[in-house]
Image 1 (tube, helix red, strand yellow):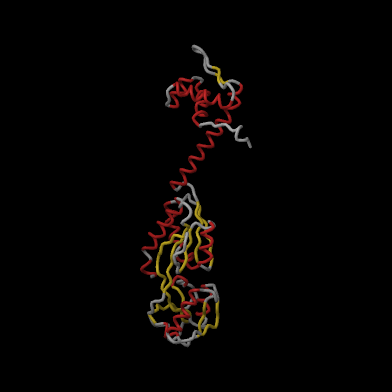
Image 2: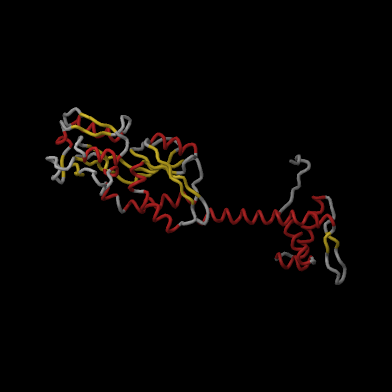
Length: 311
């Protein structure tokens, strides 16, 4: 690396002047090509020669063309390479601003990834097909907040978010809880039931650390019943199939239920106001990219049409 007293303070206009003179073999034609007056191109060339410490062109007289000196010929390919790289950089940055380039890393709870992301990403890709997308699934909101803070994720879907420093968020929808019962269960034919009607039933719950299972169990306690959880699993389809096999009932968010799942139990709406809030979070400390901004807009637009059915 050159030291500070060895570095060249070169303006790109100096390199453009040299390149134009080399192409046209004339200062006047170079000026016309660059849309400058001739004296400006002469000044840019003189400044470049002073900076590099070498005469770069031999100025012809009369009809004789301007030619590069040995130093000019040696510098020219480097000048062209620099100008080319700067043009590539300009195009890449422009692409980041118009959706022709870019990437976004999305975090999503498993249920959101399965039930909401497909329709959001389908809409997003129709408009911005050149933006690269990656998805990461975790089970806990705290995991996502940490990943967003460190920049490992650009944005994440979380549940029951509360304001925290350095994090921006927008609430998307309320995901109402439902009951799952086995086929043939006395409640299976009901359109709606209350949490209290599941009091005394064996339950299939989520993992011990699962916040949604905790909410369902708290609702049972509030109704005067101690939950009797006989199985726990963090896998949503497995929970449905355990219910379908007659091993217990379940109380869980609607988005965690796979509709149409074979042997997936019977889903019944709950009369109680039991829900979780799904929000999007992103860092307040980093400049939002075009990819992130348009994803946020797309997610809100798509889910505004489904909030009524999920909320």
